[in-house]
Structure formats: structure tokens, C-alpha cells
Amino acid sequence: GKTIAGAIAESVKPRQGGAGSDVKDLENLIVQGVAAKGGQATKGTIFRFDCTEEGVSVSVDGNAQGTVKSAGIGSALVDVFMDDKAVSPQLVDSCLDTWCGKDLFVAV
Image 1 (cartoon, rainbow, N blue to C red):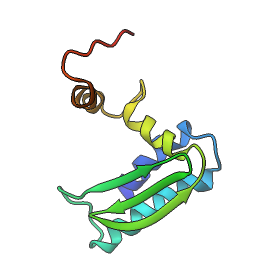
Image 2 (cartoon, rainbow, N blue to C red):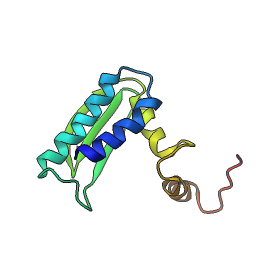
Image 3 (tube, rainbow, N blue to C red):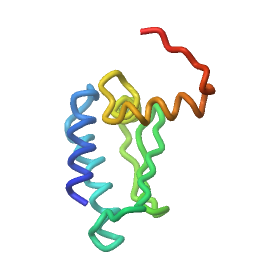
Image 4 (cartoon, rainbow, N blue to C red):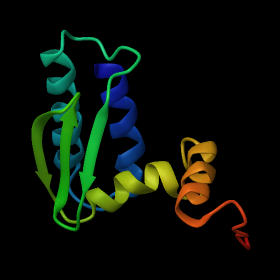
């Protein structure tokens, strides 16, 4: 649990302008959720992050862990997966295909 939580936190930290404690709170919610399911994020574990202007709500395998209330942390988490330094460019492409259709052309 700490590995995935730490990786997400390390990716969010430089994208978020708020307090570092907010990122630590996000990491702790992920760790708690993984601990509650036995301590391992195994293949098929579902992490859900509901991002709003007010913060991020975290669920692991459908079990709500809580919310980090902090302006900017939601957009920072989205940026981890969707900005020009995204952790998975394939995910960005897949989302664009799903949301906009395969014929979308993105000018850079």
C-alpha cells in the first residue's frame, strides 16, 4: 500500500501549490484503504479518486476512506494522469479516444 500511495503522493506534490500536509493526508488515505483490504494492492484493486475544486475523496475497492479538503489538490491529482508529464501517456490517449472519438486531432 505504501508503494502506490507514495508514488501518487510524489507525483502530486510538485503539481500542487498547497500545504505539503495535504499531500501527506492523501497518501495516508490510500495507505489506510489498502491496509483495510489486507495490506496489499493486488491486481484488480480499484482506487477511486473523486476530484473537485474543494478536494479529493478516496475510495479503495468501493470503501470510502475520506476526503482531503484542499483547493488545488484535485486538479493536481488529475494532472498526474493527464498533463504533458503524465505518468501514462497511453491513458491520456485512451481517455481522449473515449471522450472525443478516435478522429480527434490534438495540435501541439
